[in-house]
Image 1: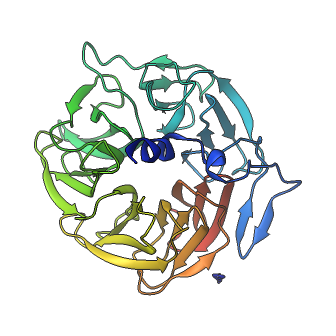
Image 2: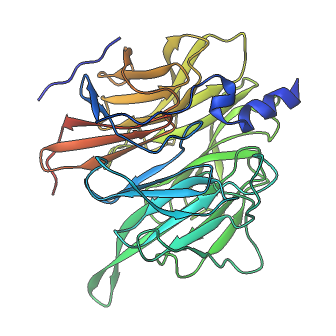
Length: 374
């Protein structure tokens, strides 16, 4: 199988908070049928004014996404059709992460940021495929809101037997304040990590094992003062080390992607500098211990959002101007037919390779060659 690529502070805060449609992106309209462009298929979804932020699949068929209107949608046929399974007005579904077909978590951005958001609960749990939600009980401490959920399946030796274990981190948020909800028992119990001493915003989180992880962030809650920031922990979040700082104001590290089993990962550098045309991604080849910058494009309109790599060389970036793709680890980039503002990518193993889902103003997917599903 082959595939081709084709080619003032208050104002800044408002730009971060406003729905994408208000920034010049037209509302998403449903298609008559999945449309294919150079391998990318665009699925029929309920129209939504702005971008959708997160998608979560547990296998090639079963997946979920949410919206800022508090709606949760599910598919059982790989995205060909979607059904609304829950609606909670006043909640802004910023992140979704499912463990299996029944059990998952829904992250809410929280109040005092986006207009119309009244829900103060940062994280919900579902045990019936998203139909009903229950607030996650974190005790007296909590966090303001969630921008990203990381689900990690590990195994531990217990009395001579390998026992499955699910580690969950829910982190946020854009505009601050910052914190992480952490569970090492599949969501039964939780601890709260205060990240205020370390970062002003947190936009994404990734753990490699129970103890080693990264947050992708900004130094300051005020975007005019913010510099892109990556932090690393090796003790489950007790201590953090700065491993990357952009050194430029008006920047955040928005989303990251580490292909499964790879030491190599990438993250998007989101710039709000109107005079800056250079679009950068950052790359690590040692599981986030060190990073280097890579130029993706010279295009001031291509403010970056999500990123998804299926191997250390092949990956895609979503921007306000559409998609970009690389086949050589970021040495060269070409335009890709991805809808504007793709905010989150997820790679799902299939029988023949890997399927990469993208969500933003549209929900899309592409099937790519790769290691067969095990």
